[in-house]
Image (cartoon, rainbow, N blue to C red; front, side, top):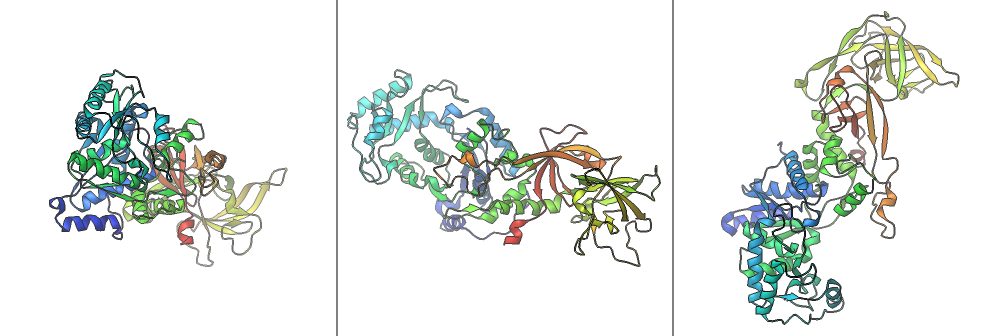
Length: 554
């Protein structure tokens, strides 16, 4: 994995450095990335992944991958494998894989311990009643009539809950904290609920499952995590995180929160992404328009670009929304260095070279990447009939138009200078063919008697392969599709976010490997789709255009 650009020291790194300097935990640093295996990773997860794994690397520590699998209803082995694959693709490797379900027995024992110490009780209230008893931000809650249930009775009921004697939702185990606490999370939160669901790892061994809040901090503690880094939405959960650790007297992992990553013209909420997938707004979790790592990978985004983008966004306590153009800038920056150049025409206009022999075909040399001297060259067939982009010709144009015009000259990339002598039109007056002459003394060299400024790309009509192309635009028409709470975010889905067409490509592109991104010269970066491409029959996704609006704006 290549190193990203040097970045400023953020508050998290300052904190970790101070802990190491003070000898806290003997100077040891251990982090973890703890996804729930109920969906696919997205760009917001990428920020958390980079932070956790890179902090461990920078401070010569360890980072675990832990699956918080306490809600079996929506979790599966499919998501476990996908998450592992995406993290490796992003460029990271964990010290070990852990599962919260590995700790179910220990968590049950700790729950019994809290019951015996008077810090937890079994409650018979329904969820609707608990919500009513909880109070509000401005009003304190009131105690459940079962709050003072004797510890021995609660312990017996809790063990019977595990044994399956009660119906789903009939009883819960709650922590006994403070029903008037200003933080709603501290008002006797639920620790266990009865839920008969098949678990993707432990099967039907359990019919009670611990809550996220009763699992997360203790899992960190069991793994000896020194720095538990999570996004700001968990800030209000930190007092509860600390309360459980203190009451149990276990290893004091420390939770620190940072602002999550948000992007313009998209959504990153797992629930909303699921709505897009299940509602048919996109083709699946790997749709190239989605901010999932699978979608971005399929679109042709390099992992290095995503890491660089996360480093540029940085780590702060202040919520903000990053311009998606900044992500595209990071993608261009990497692809400009690494992507091979090829020629392809999307809106073809035929060119006939009137002074070129009918059956003569030569091979001209194309530079694979001008940014990389070691990338070499390739052979491109050149013949009498060519295709160029329609927008590269104007019948009449001003002096600032440096492409081809009637009676004007232009250089063909890697080949000759041609002059447009005449044109052919159809019955509607549309130009259908250019009749051009070739200056046969200008193969990769300039004429001595004049200067020709323009350079355009081309393909040989007889040798071009036709490949489907998918041109992606913003998935949403609004910059912040979630801003208007009165309107469902799906109302802003851009109906023109996908346009399909045909590219006429130089023959070398027939052999491109699925998943490889290249630059269509003067057009944009395109990736051979990993799902739709077949040997010798690529289907291309436009990764990003060549124009960098973000760099100009900044």
